[in-house]
Length: 125
Image 1 (tube, one colour):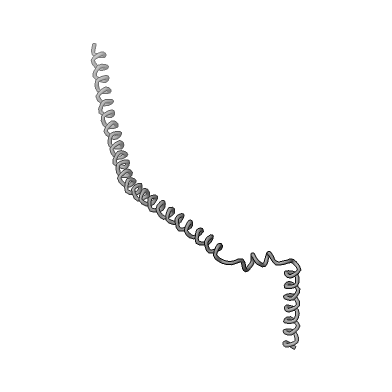
Image 2 (image 1 turned 90 degrees about the vertical axis):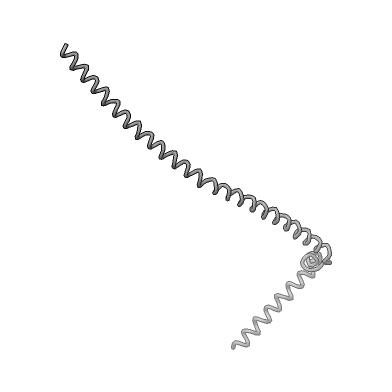
């Protein structure tokens, strides 16, 4: 019977020690959960203003892009009306000229370049 009492006392002490350790570790776990909860709360408090700023930035960007699209349409329309008002001249008219005239102009410009280079050589001597 003494042996049983000793074993019961050892068992009670073991269970008591186990309960104390369980309480201590559960307390540590709850503290860590509170820390994580505070970190998450801090993160959400900081993230909400950032998301609001991003939302405002997106709205402003959309407004700027739509304004730019409107300006682009106006510029395109202005260019088209200007093309309609300007008479045919410049490169378009040059493309319509006969090929033999274009060939003559190229040959004359080549001759002029040759004369100028001979003149420069003569002047340098």
